[in-house]
Amino acid sequence: MISYDQSSGSRWVWLVAGVALLGCATAAWWWYGSSQSADPAAPSEVASTPAAGPVVNLATPPAEGPDGRPTDFTQQEWSSLKEAVGNKPDGAKELKRITAYLRYQRGFEQWQALQDTSKTAERHALAQQLLDQLPERLSNMEMTMGESLLICGVLLTDLEPDENLRTQKMEGCKTKLEQLAPKLDSEQALRDAECRTEFLRRQAAIVAEYQAQPEAQRNQTKFEQDIEAARRSVYDSPTCGR
Image 1 (cartoon, rainbow, N blue to C red):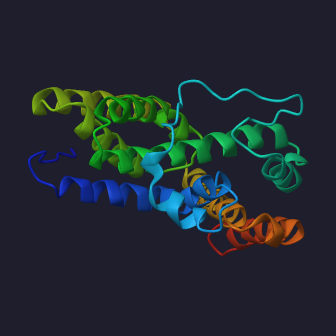
Image 2 (cartoon, helix red, strand yellow):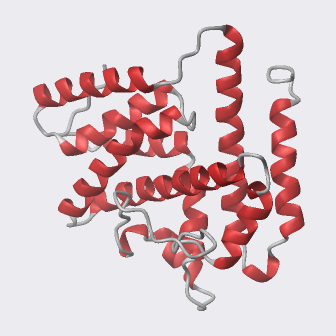
């Protein structure tokens, strides 16, 4: 059972730990860097103040253009992702998954930033959306069961001040996650799941690094090569080699 003392500022240390586990800080470089203005000073300013922008709405996916591009992705970003993963057999599904995952990371980072502001209602609304989408992140193997429970714990700490009710909700969250988690009935299945999670993390980090660069410095060929190198590094390793 994860419990937190709301009277102590140390509870927010766990939020930082959660961000580290998810790689949210890295992904935020892309999200807040890609939405920057033409002002050369904008990247550091925007990246350091994620709470200053509009609060992410995870409950309503953004509209899509004729080519399937979500409106929260630029044309160049979408083209880069399609070149890297869209042409694979499961490319369309993978594009939807990775955009949803990066959007979730952005929301988590923004939720953390809102804890020092007066936007309590907005923060709680975002926390609830993050909580609602947590099972999907787990079922997609984008995080482990332990990480999912940690994220559930910190979100409920923010949402539910009553300790008894929070404990009950935490138990409910644990039960739901256990029911929806991929069923791994062998050591090989467990290894496969761990390898997939590791690759997805590396893939998200590569996308974040690429999108954090100024457009003039982005190298599409290197971007695709880096993703393929990450795939080989994971799946050709002694642990994940097939």
